[in-house]
Length: 392
Image 1 (cartoon, rainbow, N blue to C red):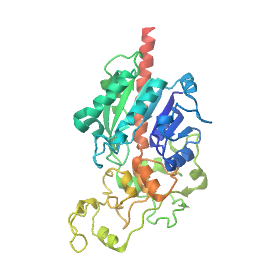
Image 2: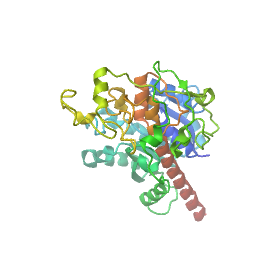
Image 3: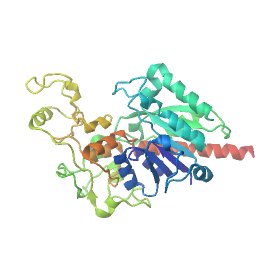
Image 4: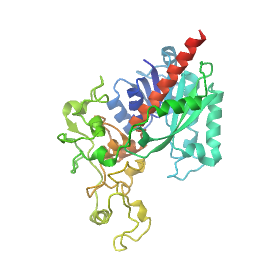
């Protein structure tokens, strides 16, 4: 089985997808303690380096494979997404944001472990910001590390079965010296096209089977009875449906307990309830009466459209939920509903406070998108092996 190392792992969305693509994740690196709790709970077989990535491979810890051990085992893939807040169009986009340079640690690990392939994920603005300055700088760094052949794939999550229009870019790199015939960009685009879903998944198809009520004490609820009619996506997500995702060797505690975890959300004051009651599915607060809202940034009030994929689920949910109003009920979406819209199945349980859980969900790479990216990497590895056989 091909082996992989995860950097900036977060709660494990990218890890879940890469695992589903058939890789064995042997080690993950993450600094946030709450995200680490979630990752450890869902990936008990993965060695987790909790702490600053700057120390990874520079210090040895019990239970974490050493650099020599990782090199000896042979790593096929290093993947991950350095923090994107310094590049995101949502944030201040400061060119000297220290987070913009964390890609250097990614490059350092790649240089030391020498995987066949690396995949770096980020927001589209990372390659466009400052007229492509950061893109050129990043690709030069990988070139100096021994990866002259690179390709940038912009992908949209909803094209790969995720009920969400989330735009991301994935930078692929192939190690120098590995045999490969053809243009890397063209081949990867072709491989990724094979992973496209047959149709997009709507918000209703993703979450309509979840109960309208929420957990008041942020505790697990009894798992909802299976409706007579389920969408194909809901069958993929639910604990009581047998799917390739839930029929893996790694059974979750949640499956054994038959509980619905993380189905809770932020409270709402009476004034806000009046406001959201006036917003139709798919609508915004742009036309709210001045009696309810003074018109400042009214568009920031948004109710999900049940007939369309969701707009982007963001980490800023942990501060303000006004953009994520449930399509039918007079409340915000829950952590579990946000996780469904990110394509986390119901057996993936999030740890920490409610704010931390929302942050983890929003920061994650959607697992089904990650699975498509992982399968694209698998296709590239097969192509390399085929080229090597032809050269013998």
